[in-house]
Every structure is written in structure tokens, then in C-alpha cells.
Image (cartoon, rainbow, N blue to C red; front, side):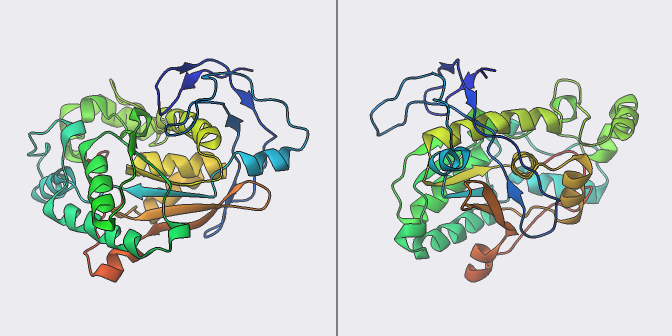
Length: 314
């Protein structure tokens, strides 16, 4: 069935999409997990001759060969560096306050000084990579903390790549919970706090906000475009905790229990990298999760939220 969506380059409607191949799932294990690309489109590519903005992908008789042609060689997901929102959230929880002392709109919340140091360390790591291993395509959430991380890292690495901003990579919208700690949610919205506990973290959608499932829908759309527009390239994405966890959910076929367990047991550090390599059969294989080697090599401090710290990933 055709699948409607938008190109991360042009944001023009891409009316027709066609699934490629079937689905394959493997039991989730720690370490290496194989995921499957599910959909593909034809779209325009910046810097290359334009292809039609839409159209059904020709039927492939060899799904494995098709997968090899329409998947990036490497996909690296980078969480933004520490933001002023992360700092304000930690301070509010430590003091027992219900609301963050933060004057920024979520989309405009910038990096902290430490977050800038973390992004600079990541840039030094990029500069040391062999040419064949450097990113060829770089996408980012338009939110200031993610975009700032990408721009700082690229500048430090001496890379002049164009940064492709895609609103589908933005942070999860917390709706009426925006700017509140867990204590604040329970104090100001007790009925919603009770409903959240009943429904569970994965499916719960705060009024005016998004559930994790909503974020996963955005991620599926992004992945479909990446598969076709950036086939056979090294793709780096700068984004947010909930978005990166949703990439894992979609690529690895995880269920509610699996993704929540990972999120609770292994908090995603600021400026960490989660990487996938293309396997021989064209699938994407997890090779690293929450990796902080770039920060460690430069002696930069690593930071992350405490497990069950609350709803926000500012």
C-alpha cells in the first residue's frame, strides 16, 4: 500500500512509496541486534541530479540485492551534548522543585558550557577518523541543542558538510508536562500522573504531547527516506534520547518491554554514539550503543539523566 510522507530535503509530499522485501526479527540480546529496513522511496538528493519527487519503487525480484542498494553503509545516531535544560532539570529534582528554572522554549534550549565541550570532543574524534569512515551525510533535529552539537563537532573536525535539518528528528513533545519534574507532574496534574502510571511509559501520551509510539512513527518515516536518498553512504544523525531509542525500537523490532528495559538500565549519555553497520544481507546491525569513547579520549566529562528521572529530556 502506498505510504505518504515528506522528504527530509525538500519537505514536499512524497505521495507514493512501496515496501521492499519482507520482515525478519531476531530475539533481542545485549550487544549485537539485527534490524530490517521496511520501506523505501525515490526522492530528490541535494547536490545530485534530481530524481522524481515520488513514484513506486520498481519491484525487486532479489530482495537481498535491493536491500544492499538501498541502505546506508553506516548509520550513527548522536545524542546532543548536555543542555541548559538538562542542568535545570537536575537542579530542580535535587532541590525538590516541581518546575525547572528555565526561560527557554524547548526548541531554543542551548548547550551548556559542558555540552559545548562534549561536542568539541566529538569533533576531535571525527577529525581523527580515516577518510573512508567519516560521515558523508549529516542530518539533525532543528532544536538548538542538537543543531549546536552538530555544528560545533563539524567545525572542530574541519568538515564543511551541509547540515540537513529535519523536524521529524525533534524531541518528544511533552505537552502539559513540559518544564515539570516528576514531583511537579504529580502536584499539578495528579489525574494524569495516575493515568501515566496505569498506561505505562511507552503508550502514555500527555495532553498536548506525544507518546513514544508517536515518536516511532516519525522515525519510521525518516528511515524510509534515508534508505532511498542516502543509499550506500555514511549517515550521521544528531538528535535526542527518545528519538534514538525509537530508532532502536524500529530497526531491531523491539517490543514495549524490550525498549523500556534498555532505557531504564542503560541511560543514554549526552554526546554518545549509537551505531549500525550494513550487514551482507542489507540489514542494519547494531555495533555500538551509548558509546562515549569520543569523550573519554578527550577527557571530557560524561553526563546523563538518572534512571526514572522524570519525563523530560530537555
